[in-house]
Image (cartoon, rainbow, N blue to C red; front, side, top):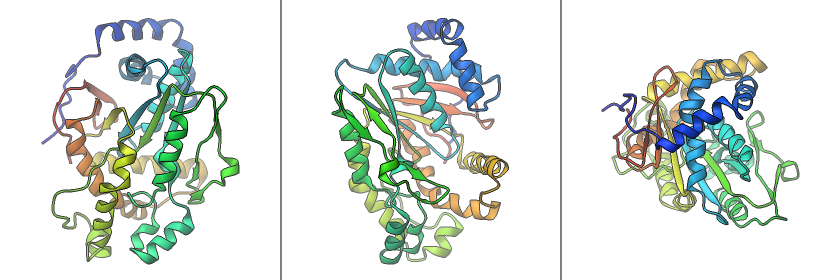
Length: 321
């Protein structure tokens, strides 16, 4: 079953569309142009911003209640554009007078030594960061609690993870958010994932050859049924970037890696990358099937990586697994 990509599955509220067009053509025109340049996006990306990014930011503003912290989850497979979307929304919210903060699941990975210990005690595949069980979930809960309870004089340290070193940044180097927080943008590739209820038969070569007993898969399922559920329940509004299928995620992630190699000279070769993505495949496929049935806002991406449609609080159906 494929995702529905027809334009206009569900329109933004009329007042959101009107305000978005007005701001994009006046006070935010330069802001949008600078954002596109900073993130090295194609010039025509302005159309996507005006049609989807900016209306989403304005829609979230209307969901916020004075005196409360709104936690917005942004979920999507690798390469779907979570960080770009989060950065833009935070920028626009700040321009509109909101105190906003971004917080990624990627920044609460267990340290390299912790994952090494886990790989020795539970399963060798847990040495690789990514899947549920390789995050410090309590650190995530504590950080969200601190952000949601922050006052005008509060100083909240935000965890950071250095992927180039495959280790957490020392806490004395973490950035600090000052003051209260109106909206937290909490993004992650497996945000909102649920434990699998289907038989855990191998679906790729990694599972078939390196998890012959299924213990790695069972461990991940147990994590999703436990403390990860508590973390995900802190999200008030869930936004999903819905890829057209797993094949697109493979292609987009490879494109990311090619850009990284071109920019830094470092990065994984294609065979290494295929194996790396296979760690994420099972949960990604499950999310593509499950999350469109309950997420508050779904942005449907086409194979060309552009957003093609939006649905808001309406069950549209599943994406391709």
